[in-house]
Length: 112
Image 1 (cartoon, rainbow, N blue to C red):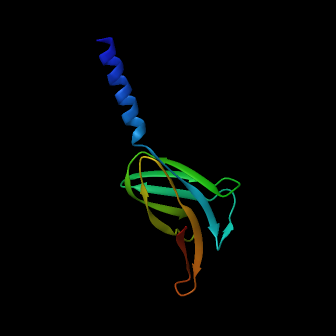
Image 2: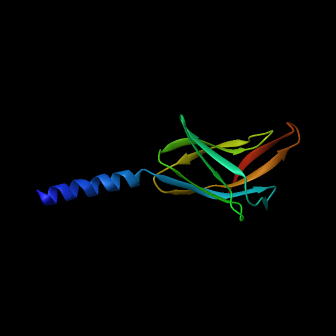
Image 3: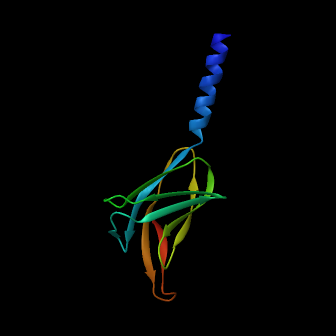
């Protein structure tokens, strides 16, 4: 009986951690790292996760849900965004803000 309970607890613990994914990367503008304090937001359905970039322009968010998400750089005037995939592991998305002359707005691109 004790072995059965321990096995169930272990299975529950592993199930809770196996679905949570980490989304991380850097934020730059025209190839230059932007630095600290830029807000990154990830939306999956009605759930919203936010963080700020650190002094090295890095961000890191834990997203418990898997699947298609929307990543946005939150700004005062513009909020460029891009679709990403969240999965059970770690996904890296290095982001680059590029000025679009025709539309007079920033576009968010994922760098290779």
